Length: 138
Image 1 (spheres, rainbow, N blue to C red):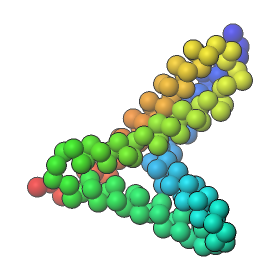
Image 2 (image 1 turned 180 degrees about the vertical axis):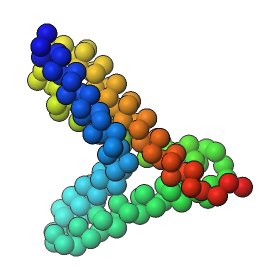
Image 3 (image 1 turned 135 degrees about the horizontal axis):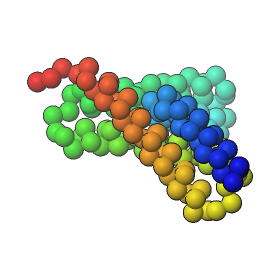
């Protein structure tokens, strides 16, 4: 019972951390994947970091550009999904990493991690909507 309470407490803590870091899930995932792809071609560390940084900034810029300039709602919905899905995956993974040894039940672990992923996705959507409110209304 104590381990379950500890797991819930750690989950709450990681959800708070993930809430504040949810905006950075997309650029971090793009950075990691681009870095590993370019570094695997033996391009060098600095070139890999430079290219990965450029791609991470480009990904956020592209999502914000679509939110600011898109006239069709389906494009805005797609841009929000591209931004929110990595945050949900990151929230799930963070909580799973913290609590996988503390909870024996696989069902409880999946429910807990899924809830944390959902909360992190909502946080990313709220943060993204804060950026979207800066767009000119027309």
